Image: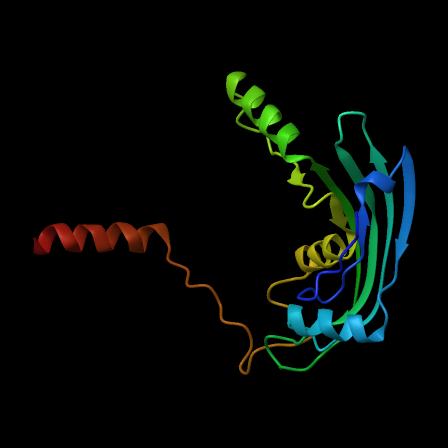
Length: 180
């Protein structure tokens, strides 16, 4: 089985599941060009460093468990000042993959048991798992959707939330009833 890289992904590191036996350890460090593609995809000014240490175990039924740690040095763009700023990220990585037939059996069993909390594993596609895609996904999930540079404030300061005393709310209700 040929392992194919995904040309549309900014970082691809596919591994044939058939080559995984027992416990496997993998360390991924995308090169500068891949980090630039990742930054563009995620709307970052830069990804200065990215490393993922993954422990991969394959069960006899074909399920693959991935656990590890992701560390990154990124430069998001501040939503207030529009300036890039340095940010360090450390995030756990935990995900399961399984063959589609196993996912179907697991889903059926969870439905029979009325297990509403069941979350099926991701499918193993074409006999491989792209660990590069897993790393990019977990980096994306670790980013603040509204990054704010430390000390950045809106002109005039942050808006104060409107506060209404309970008596003002009662007065407004009373005036509404008197008017109606």
